[in-house]
Image (cartoon, helix red, strand yellow):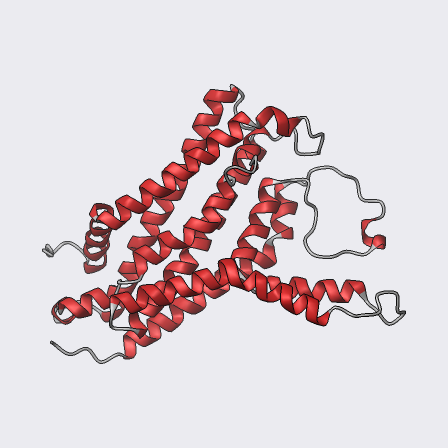
Length: 321
């Protein structure tokens, strides 16, 4: 890694990391898988657009938003693919962020140069975030472009703002898994162990967490449903609170409100709260207020994982091999 006197070490490391990510086979294979699956979801949404519009709901005027949410059951929607495959992108870019440098013995050589230690971990995170942001926004705008060609109607400013908001939330979501993978790359010296730990957490929240919550819901379900002491709202809020601890569920809730303007609230509501509500789509600003707790949760977990990784790296003793 050559560095001119006029170049800042942070910029040099960022450019080097971006080049390593883009030219690696794992990134090429992963982006090919995500692109093919997303294009399959786009084909499914375009072929089922007329059926979805005939359903007669408040979202019928938002054609472009349906490109990201429609599914006929054979293939999941674009949002579902991002929810499932997005963590793999973050894990693939972060599971060997530090462990590979330590195993190769290059970390000690780099830090022996006039480079601050925090510059190393910050540059690796920023480089991975640039790659993730570029990839997600390119996929999102490709879907919009194909939809514009197929439908022939340009998106409204409201639709464009919601799609951009969805892509920003997706970046935060993938960033969470990226920081988790970087954390495991600092906790484990072996790259295989770091990758397996990250994949285990992803599989737990993607598949097994919902099963566990369903088992708890059955266990805590009151036997006397008609009892005057039974509080259905409190019970539903308890289950909703457990599900909200899942990052995948937080992403699903946030994207559902952004891409389906007819959703006016999340979680259980009483009849008094529902009474008098007009079934009309919410403005973008109101939808952002609805999903503000979900966004705060995703950002908080992301910052927490990065803070722990930063602290571990700054306190670690690095010796030459």
